[in-house]
Amino acid sequence: MELWNTVIHAAILGTDKKNISEREVNDVLLPAFNVIQENGLLDKEEKFLQAASLAFNYRQSGAAALNREISMAPAPSEEKKYCSRKSMQVLQDIVSEENIPLLQLWLTHCNKYQQIVAPPFVPLLLTVGEQHKKLQPLISCCTGKRGAWLAVFNPHWNFGNTGTEEELWQTGTTDQRKMALQQVRRNDPALGLQWLQQTWQQEDAATRQSFLELLYETVNDADIAFLEGLVNDKSKKVKETALSLLKSIPGSAVVQQYQQALQQSVSLKQQKKLLGLSNTIQPEFHLTIPDESIYKTGIDKLSNNKELTDDAFILFQLAEHTPPAFWEIHLQVSKQQVIEYFQAHETGKKLIPALVNAIVRFKDVEWAKAFAQHSKVFYIDIIPLLPPAEQEAGCLQYMQQFPDSIVQYALRFSNEWTAALTKEIFNHTAKNTYQYNRSFYSSIIHLLPVQATTILHQVSPEQEYHKDHWNSMSAYITKLIQLKDQTIQYFNQ
Image (cartoon, rainbow, N blue to C red; front, side, top):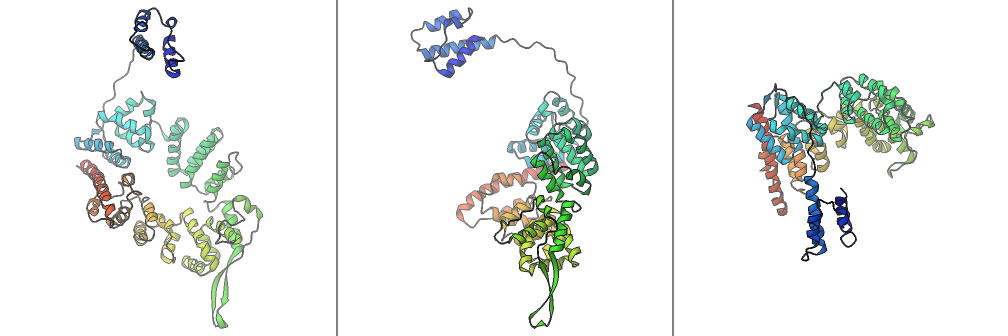
């Protein structure tokens, strides 16, 4: 419609530069348009607005409704039981709070008890699933057959796992393929590797990179040949990720190369004490690189740490990519003795953080325990590898010394915090209410025990100006815990 285009242009340019002329108005609207233009009481801006209104209404009324027969089968009957009215009310409150961890908890319980939401909530949950992909499998289960039926009419809702993992890998979206690959790698790493190899050449660089990053959790010796074939990939990121993965596999050539260099660079020597009355055993560090190609694997020659010489820095890099068990075999001593020898030597002390990095990289639980027991310094990086009881003991022991770091590690716990740990964390966060705000407490509700409401009354910041803010925060936390408690109770009834 030419008239409407003129209206748009005039609105953009202004009536001084562009206005509606009579020749641009069709015969149907011309009488009404002339009445507007002949009204002497109106200025040119008012005339333009009235003419624009005339054009708009004509344009709207002139649109013909789509005449198409739509044939659809009704939604199938549900097989699962609907949630109770109380459970649905809790769901309404959780959605109003926009609390995703609580929603995930609610959906988990709903699925656990093989129930589904009431029909009015199905579109709401499907819409939430558009933005929060990790909730999609649970939402698909909890919206039942009606949810699957509705998803056919909206591609953004069609995230239900309607096919096998292999079908999703072959025909799904990138996100669906990543989820399928991740699940298969957990259950059958060899099959997941086979899938990658079959489609690798058809993937773009970004997709290959994203698939490789999923392997960190399950990378093993069987992946070595595939990863070694990627170190010359055209994509720099793919090459770097492949090399990083190889450095996490004890049996890879690059890790073996690092071990060979350390074998020639570190040894135990007997040294006589004062007056030669007794001997002591100490480590000796003397960098020896048997093959210069080692520097092509990402080992830097020059130190970027003032505390380390160039040689010590190279040893540090080699050690942090070598399985901790290497030291027991090479030096023929126990874990405890390795730790003690390193702690007693000037260079060894500086390499201990590299051993800690290796413990974390290779997920060595036994070495994590040894460090927790025998190291003079507690390294909080090993906390996630310790048994649950020892994790909490370490957190409680070093909470005063490293409060913010301990909080960050406590966020990784898979189980709820105990009352003791919850109280310590509340005592710290209550003094830092701007750093630990509502968003923080909203994200940790799955970790807070129900008795946290009682613990809240035992916490009070020392500074008066913190108290009002903390009281407000306590009320908010209490509300979240009540929703959590109600979710658990109502599904157990």
